[in-house]
Amino acid sequence: MDMKYIDSEIWAIAGGKGGTGKSFLTSQMAVALAEKNKKVIVIDTDFGGANIHSFFGLKKKTSSLNLFFDDKEPLQNLIIETDIKNLSIIPGDYNAITIDSIKYMQKLKLLRHIKKLEADYILLDLGAGSTFNTIDFFLLADKLTVVTVPEITAIENLFQFIRNTYFRKLFFLLGVYGLKNKAKEIWKNRKKHKITNIIGLIDFIKTELDDNPAILAELSDFSINIILNKLRNSSEIDQGFSIRSLCLKYLGVNALFSGYVEYDFQFWKNLSLIQPNSNINISPRIKKEIFQITENIINEKQIKIGTARYG
Image 1 (tube, one colour):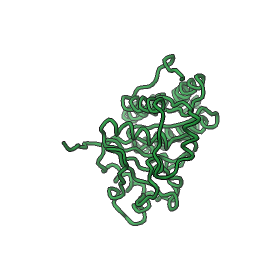
Image 2 (image 1 turned 135 degrees about the vertical axis):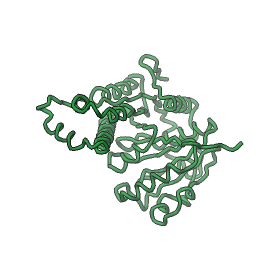
Image 3 (image 1 turned 90 degrees about the horizontal axis):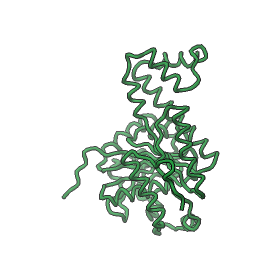
């Protein structure tokens, strides 16, 4: 029986900084979805640092997004099958494109073509950082996921990314509903209005402009999935709950702590030595942790305080 695709669900995976293992986790979540007999396409939108092809043992990128931008090649024609059933990729091209070089109309065109691809799930592996283009691709998705490691600088960068993304979403919606100038005036005079943070701004808009409930409904639907990677001890699990609390307290963002992956020294050492065309073997423990994270994202669930165990 042929698969039928009514609407693809798009997942975007991002991070505040590099080196968090984001691309690896993207590839393995894609594997977990494919093993559920779902058709999955991974698109490497980490412009300037594309490497998702390496996690599937592909040495040469015979096609890439560079052909879409420069040669107007249809996105469908750039899909490359992997050795994993139901799983294919569209590689990026780190030699030709940077995220800041993409023009606005090119970005819109790519977003339209991504939505037309036939798959159950489309995973976007985004680059690190908070450029407008990265955030715009992130906000395209149905499920928003961020990856970090339990280090203070990584967590700070992650919170900045979430904050910048939420502000981008907020001011886009304010523009759609014709409230941007009003909101800017309110924020500029926030001391006068006794506003101290973004939650206060939203609450003020709610009271002053209660005839625009649609914008509040859209903002309430904004949700972020958090993954902690490379955990070395049980105390670091709490950092996932702390990030969630910060998002709720200072942004009013519904952040879900979807899960964590423990650090495996031998695995990460072996991963750095893997050559193209080599298979990546992960331990049963890591595979189980990534499978659980994937399930939590699908079902919009999170791990509960007191139930998480290390080792």
